[in-house]
Amino acid sequence: MIEVIKFQSIEYVIRNIDFVFGSRTIGIKKLNSVLMNENGGYVSDEARAIDENIFYFVEERHLFLNEKSLVSKIIAQL
Image 1 (cartoon, rainbow, N blue to C red):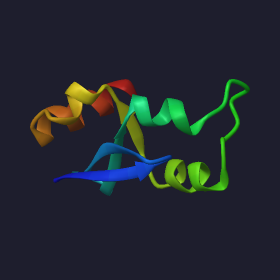
Image 2 (cartoon, helix red, strand yellow):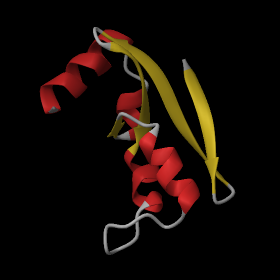
Image 3 (cartoon, rainbow, N blue to C red):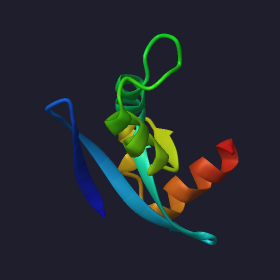
């Protein structure tokens, strides 16, 4: 199921998918890039909280794959 999360007044798509070890939230790389500063730290406490709830980040186009394909793509990259 595709959902939206808002950070710094911009909406980003996320998706909850089921793995064999449970349901996890997947975000897009564009969101990940705004959560972190150039030194690799979080830009805010809100950014840290968002990041801690996202299991993995993918390219936005991959977020819309069918669940089986998305799970396979993520598992292959872990």
